[in-house]
Amino acid sequence: MKSIILLFLFIGIIFMVIGYIKTNQKCPPPIIEYRYYPKTFKQEMEDEVPVSMIFGKMFKDKTPGIRNL
Image 1: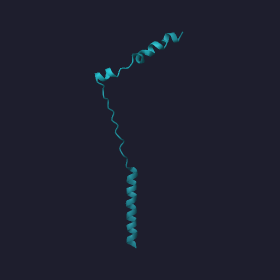
Image 2: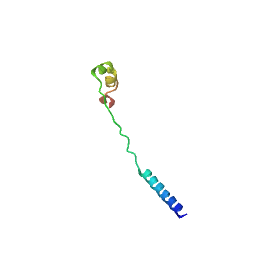
Image 3: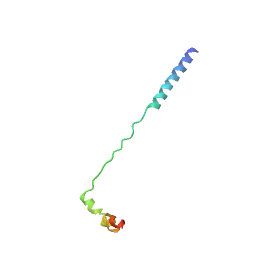
Image 4: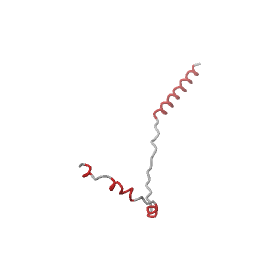
């Protein structure tokens, strides 16, 4: 009878230690790797951006001096 009680006590202590270790164990955060692949000259020429997208705002919007008048 005494050995069964000691066996249950020992198993209980083992389970408590395992639970404590699992709660305090932290996984490392995932490593995020950013890569930049530059375009080749050929890709730059094929994927042209319209000039109106780049400079259109310069001609459509009013200048700061005109806005204040």
